[in-house]
Length: 163
Image (cartoon, rainbow, N blue to C red; front, side):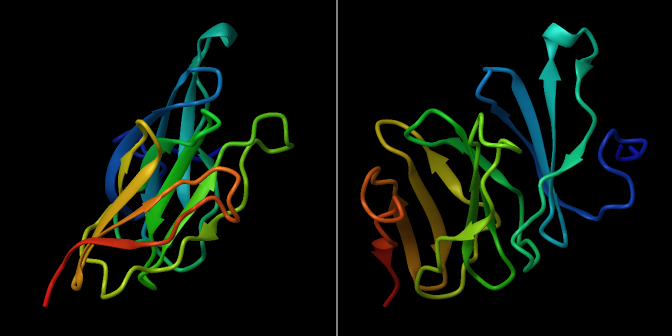
């Protein structure tokens, strides 16, 4: 069990960004926060269990630190997906895999768009397809989910470039 600070967040962690809200595969509310080492913490509503909320638990991280808030979205299979901008300028993601052991995949890299990422979080849009948007020193870039095609991501494409 993770000790909580007076603010209700995991104690002893230097948090970056804000708490983000998502819905897990049971449609229960889930909270996410990332610390400066890139570890993401979560807790989720447990209305059927009577306690209301789970304890904070570590989801690990990409191992490169975090540049800002974790961002939550929903993948094409309607499962929760998380994104972090790493201190190495890459975007990392982890997604829910209900029924597969821990319920989450391992953190993996979506690589970096051109330039240095200047946004502190990833903008996630989920309709009609999952789309990520980041701002870098070279412009604004998007990456879209393409289910059934390789890794599932199309690669970073400039929507506005500098220079």
